[in-house]
Image (cartoon, rainbow, N blue to C red):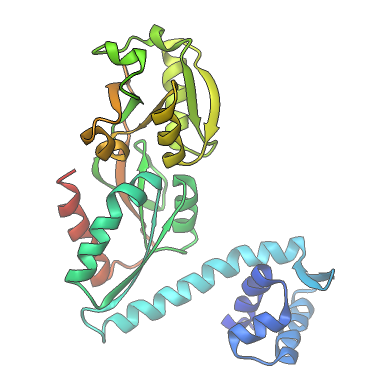
Length: 299
């Protein structure tokens, strides 16, 4: 089959937009040209890749399989073009960063703002998702860098460099009966209303692992996938939860919340600078890594 990037871009864009007219506009092509490439791919491969339903174009199962690789190839082509251009544009470039919720919300914004002032010719885009989603984006070459809270890991071909520890703590409002204790015993938590993090949260995973290791069963009354929503629920109620100490730094300073260490906790979590070892580390990449590493030392 005579592959070219246009055909692979058509596959990816059709999966996203479901309309030939929209794909043609994105690529600067005429609609008959897009249709020609679609038919050409099906004829060359000998399998149906597309089907029409309710006025929209969808990918068949075979088309979805092809799209899995099209996304990676398109992302690599974009990266190759960007990296080569950087050799002729010293001091400039673009970084696509993905971050999990704690570093993406409470660590990176101020660092990125300061970095942009120091390197005004480097543009940055930040995507905040759960750690598993950021890992997948790195594997698919959709982002250059990941900054994630996670337990120690080995995810070849992903490389993780530790920036700092991300300490998890129990937290509650100052009027909560738990605030009477300087330290908590696991048994204290059996009958306390508890707020769990969402299903994909690494905090939830570590909380449940800890409870199982202690032989206790928590009493969850709510489940939330927003850190700010969890904080507000704890601020105004009699529930407790687990959170990164970084995420409540301001509330602790204002004495709106209190925290206690998780007793007998063998599980450690860290903030990692992560990247795919298959991607070239450009000068822009290294400039950001050095700046981020120096900045995080203050946390």
